[in-house]
Image (cartoon, rainbow, N blue to C red; front, side, top):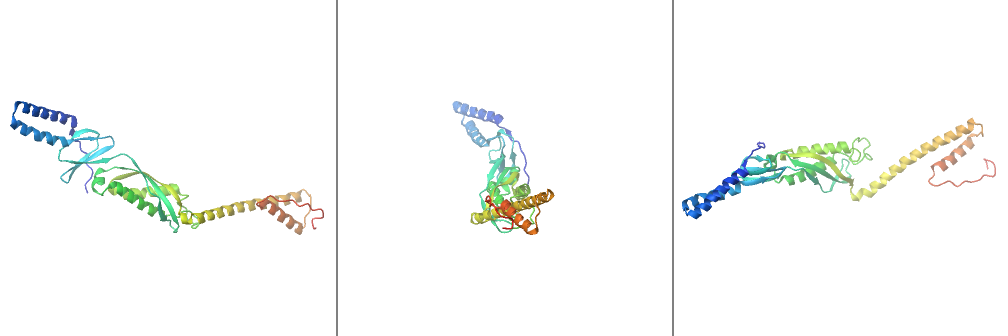
Length: 284
């Protein structure tokens, strides 16, 4: 397989001077009516014109002569090369690619919506020009394929896979690194350098988003309730201990159970407790 070859064609300004000399010769020939010189000069003038070209900063021109690769011009400036060269322009600038939101399945089969933001540029012009057809389209298709493979390698979260240490939601650093490696491997054949690849959008698919939101809310409520109960048990224990140590009141087992029940209701309830004044004894 051929590799990129950097070439430097002739200085365009020097050849432009030669062109003007030939043009002046042609005009002089017309004046002095020397037709044989005119016949020689005109083909040279017409042949020179296609040889001039410009390479802008962070640009390149791939030179091909009748199907044979002759090199790549990466130096910016004004040049002249063989007029029979075809000159394919390939930009070396960094480009952004914001992929469409794809509907894919994660590792456990949940449908999710995901897209990727890719920053890339052409590194080897020979591969970009000749190893693939339409390298820009190749970048788009292979990026989508890499995203689909990545989504199938990780669960969206660890609700259904508690053993998963890395998920699409929580392991963004690891996931983005895996995504970048996957895209880099796929685009190497086209001479593309991946500068950055990261997930730009991630969510459940619309048909399950509502159910998954309820599940997340339920998990959050259970976790909050667990914390509340743990705190309430500690507060009740402290209250009973403090009352016993200060010898304020002595409770039998029935009274302790009644007080614990009342305190747990007050501390764990969603609404403020309504006090009830007991005008009798604690047993009434």
